[in-house]
Length: 452
Length: 115
Ligand SMILES: Cc1cc2nc3c(=O)[nH]c(=O)nc-3n(C[C@H](O)[C@H](O)[C@H](O)COP(=O)(O)OP(=O)(O)OC[C@H]3O[C@@H](n4cnc5c(N)ncnc54)[C@H](O)[C@@H]3O)c2cc1C
Figure 1 (cartoon, rainbow over the protein chains, first blue to last red):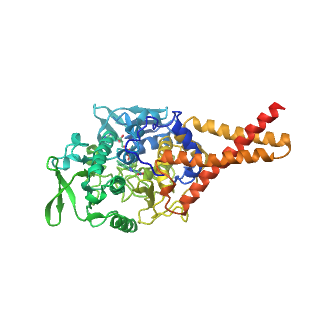
Figure 2: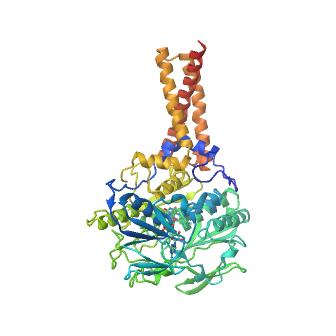
């Protein structure tokens, strides 16, 4: 019954609001599916706190918008300003489905304004400078904005320039893929991968050695490519190679073991301690650093995932970690439970920018936002909050088209399944796939509106 | 897993289906009300009509599964564990019961209007 045809792009696959056939059909099983979506806690529905404080949110992505929506509800009289130059909003967890040929780029693209509460000011510029001592931020046009409280939610940057020879304009050509780049390039990656699946050859997969968002995504895309090759009868003349940045595939040991066994079963070759430093697009070889020196690995298709770092205005500001593992790439120095800055007590970080050991996913954002908001509201109200973030992260790890493993874990690498005994965390299940394809986007959008 | 309240569920469903969510809710409630009306009016379940409705309902169950397969670009051949079979059963069941009730109600209302 699985019927995955290469281009099932339908214009009806856009967000909410449109009445179309597909929407109609979604209703049928929605009840059953929804019962299976991990939903985070709702903050205490207390009466709004009266204040005239000015709260500035830098970044209007998943975390910034969710924080804005919730703060708008929790305060009465506060001035809330959100700053982001990007007008488009991207549902990034959907990039994998776009690059798998299952969704079009319209599925992941909307606009920031769709989710913004009316009583919030939007400044469509980037923050260029953070001055935590002076309690102000300065935008790209030089506009200085003072704040009483600051939430930093700028996400991260993809440092393609760190890979010598990489040219993002060529994604989609000559076997070059890069799912992470953008909705357009995720679609271009699908075209390159689909051609590869028709012809076979050597497929090269990898991840950066830095912190990264959704560390499961590189693994998923390898599984998806493997499945397409099998469906098109080209798997036998194909070698799939996964270049791991260290000796593991995933930071949570029990998940790592499971993926290792699945890779063994699917005949995906793992080569450890390989970090991509360059690429030769005309010769089609990846250049990797290894403990023994430099190594070239040829490919017919590659999914390049560049190093990820804090955006420069954060990275080179006093907000960043000054020492330790998170200092090099400039992640923000916050307490891992309260998400409050360790040195500036009127500043919080939410989402990918937070320098905490786990949780660069939208699922983490969902759990971080209520905590940060509770902490901020309590602080403004002169109280303390006992709302803490435990490192919760989740990843529907697609292992083939039609099946995924729902992997949920915390700071301690404990598995924290939402449905113990019902949805087994390390089992490849259709229900998890159904969640990923049907329920995650609506849950994400509800989160942006502060309703999930 | 913390509390999952009704407001959250409604919000998520609305994101998923848009205005259609409310339309379907109306159809479901309308179907139940009409069924109740027919049952109270006739004072019994009409055997032949019920069997006809159940037959249509069985088809409804399969249609529900086909729709799910289409929406998720996958299907029951992808089932990997007991919970998947449970989900398939639930989807089929929702299709069956929903369509049976609707079919019974529509036929009942038509009979009542004719007489
Ligand atoms: C391919 C891929 C697959 C993924 N899969 C999953 C998944 O399956 N499950 C999951 O939970 N998560 C997944 N994620 C991760 C998830 O999308 C991110 O963790 C989430 O979007 C983080 O939210 P954020 O608000 O921190 O960052 P973003 O959503 O990236 O938003 C950051 C915002 O900050 C803005 N910004 C940047 N710099 C500045 C500045 N100087 N001033 C003002 N604004 C600025 C940007 O323009 C952007 O709008 C995936 C991500 C990718 C790329």
